[in-house]
Structures are given as C-alpha cells and as structure tokens.
Image 1 (cartoon, rainbow, N blue to C red):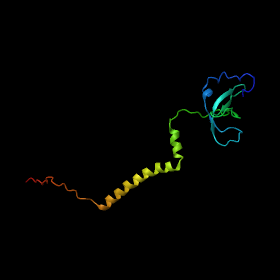
Image 2 (tube, rainbow, N blue to C red):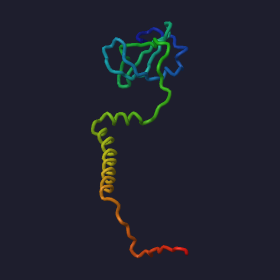
Image 3 (cartoon, rainbow, N blue to C red):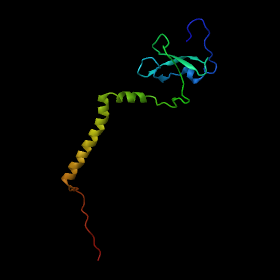
Image 4 (cartoon, rainbow, N blue to C red):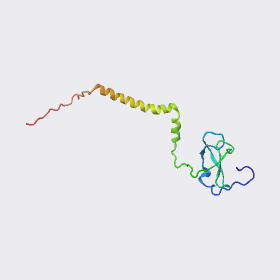
Length: 141
C-alpha cells in the first residue's frame, strides 16, 4: 500500500489505536488460501469510509498480497488470554498423548473398581486383635 514516493495514507484516528499493534487471525480474502493466518498489521489506509488493513507475516520480507476491512458492524476480539492453554490443545491434538491422558485415569478407576469387586466377593473378614483385652459384658441386676 505504501509503494512508491507517495505520502502514506491518512492514519490519524487509527495510528495509536489497538489495531496498530494487533495481529489478526483471518481467512485471507480472494487469495486462494484455505487456512486461517495470523499476521501483523503493518499499515492502515483510512482514505476511504472504512479503514483497510495491510498485513505481513513475521517471517515474510514483503507485505501480504491482500488487504482487508472490517465489514460487519460487530467484530470478534480477544477479551482475555490464558497463557499456555494453547499448548494443552496442541498436545490434545496428538493421538498418543490424548490416549495417555484418557487411558491412565481410566486404568486407575478400573483397577480400583476391580479391587472393590474382589473385596465384595470375599465377604466380610474377621479382624481379631491379638493381645487386646476382651471386654466382658456387665449386666446390672
């Protein structure tokens, strides 16, 4: 968007806004890309009625070939984050880890249930305390 000797687009309202340092995740419009991408906003063109955003990936040396605007009256935005939660979802995507996370607690529950069944089938056991004094019943007449 800022190629050539022309002055940069008017950015007064957006220059210091949260959009200036934002990294939106979007499906690039008319690009042929079918997966979501997260790229930083590098320029905001406010010459029209609505702002138009130019993005660039951190590993890319040039701007993305697409621009996008916020067409809907309301837009989703991040209100809060939980640091590290993404790693949990990433781990759950792995089949082996998912099987361990589900399998280990299920195995523990199974073993504990089996122990209870065996105890129930044995019946009550007589517990005798060797060396303990025997209580005699005292009756009053």
